[in-house]
Picture 1 (cartoon, rainbow, N blue to C red):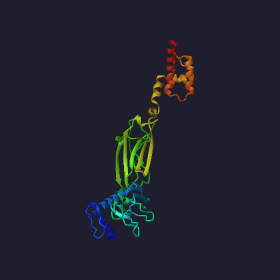
Picture 2: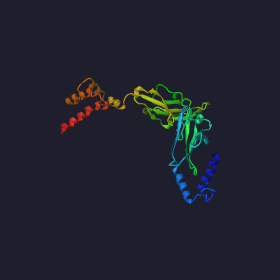
Picture 3: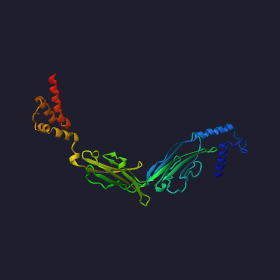
Length: 335
């Protein structure tokens, strides 16, 4: 069978290069130019439609790789799979046995689950990472071949989420935050990101990342955060610092710390404090239910009602609306 295959491949090469002439096959039927054109049509028919190789898989998982092709009335000769250039699986429907496997490091083929269009690998490990190629060949005389490849990486997940160190429980404006986020050992190392109040930090705040080889094939990542605290970093007096660790699409974990700011400065709305200083007597009169001095009585009664019954009224407008209403009333009287 192998000798016949080699002879058929030689015939294919001569047809492809145009070196095959009438009578070149000895006593067999001569191949004329129109027959050569028919061979070219067959070449176009065989094609690879899709190749599905997962980019990232978790250690010890079972992986199915899919190789879809269209013969278009052509007969299938073989389907072969390679890892980093080494054949590990062959499917030949006209041979016995139809399936052959070959030893390749990191490749453990499940023969019962593998077919002509898919191959299944059990218990993948770190040496299973690499480039995988599927090669499909049609039958004689052309033995036309198509192939495609994809890369797969086996991931060792961290055994815990990222850890934050170096922080304090309270900061004031002007203080310097200097913290570190460290991922647990993994392969490949986790990609780390910092967030302040759920917003990505300015890249100027970052130190690193730094990757440390743990000596067992695993790696640890560390990303520092350093910045000077400003009012913009607080929301309602608090600042949330979060570190996110990801590995492709197979791992996502985060850790978050919430720190307090200076309450006397950060927990009082700025707009309300201005109006309180300018009209402290107005707030006291409204709270005690007194008529507003200098305002029309009807307007005072109206606004006393609004002040005590409309809790959703913003503080700034609750304090300034009496002046606006009184101005409007005075202006309308002058007309």
